[in-house]
Length: 544
Image (cartoon, rainbow, N blue to C red; front, side):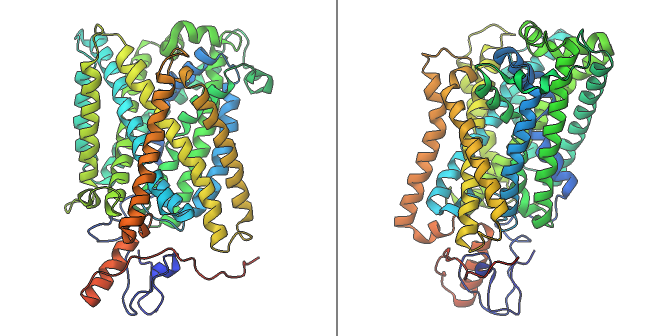
């Protein structure tokens, strides 16, 4: 998709705020057919929507996150939490979606932050994003291995250790991650549609055969939010939304990024908020609002299956168990794709080795970034395996350690990125002289930043509750510090680049745009060009 016109003396760089003119008569294609560009036109609105929704793993949220929130936090008003967070995420999406019209980069979060707050902060954000999404993705292998081992034991009477299916999952995900994006979208789409259909059938059954209090709406009463665990419950609920913010990661691979990305983000937020609010409400309806906390404490993640059994029969419950596992698989694949693209974007811009910043010639996929995440996943799973001395079927290592730790560390990083991106959106438009024209969007971004920072503070304060550790445990500060270390490493790396390699520092967040400008100037003059800089375009009087 051209970002400049062949007949203009102003290049795409000037139009996008890089401030560097291009030679007249040359069209620069930011998205298509370039060695360091992901191939465009591979994924449309349906495919992108299915890809980002798959990361939320609806059945894993319903059976895991929702039940755990009832069990641990004792908050009956969980459905109202999803409504509240739906509003917060919509406020975040208002500014972020507008920013995505100007920034088309597989390093979505850090590119946005770099454009708004500078290359050094963008570098810090890139390492946080890589660490956070990698932790989310690798952590899911724990619950995947545990659940697959359980299915093999239940239906085939075969006893295997959790790490065997986990490592098999690493291999399969690695192979799929190196394939075309549109193929992955089809795999994710099929699994997601089946998963959502099963949950919808369960919801209807719960509504048709409610518990002793009938179709009570007590869960939506603000008084139902009372309790000391409200802050931590918000952290759990935020984890259910993680995924919609990934839409800009695929901007380079869509044919119309200016419209598709924003559309998908709002569709995803709306779906997640409504679907999860209704599902969590109907779980309470099925048990009775007065009994849901006790039922969740007794049954744990098996609560959903114990509720569907009497209402829909054993065959449906067996299918629910099976697609619970496939939903976990879809989530792993979705997060793997995101990590691979962040690694690709960072390699392309010099934040990681350049080899990561090249796509496969056969299909345009970020194969090297995918391979890196596969290796990291295998190493982490093997590390937890070597430290696991529990008997087969014990969830201590795969679920309570690998899955819980990885999921909460990752969610913490994503909350930090979202809050920082909201601030970056404000800075970006104000510096471009569009503050007045974008006033409503900037207000939304400011409110989102405040709300997300509040959730972040609760998450750090109560991290021992999130990972089910003693308050005196070192895990309370050690695990959150992983995100802090990633941010520090990235900030220091960015500062060093600014001093020692200013040309590389100036390109942080510009992605393929900067590379194409280099290539054009190099071909024309025979020498490497100076780095593009971020001089803001002339301020124009904002329109009505």
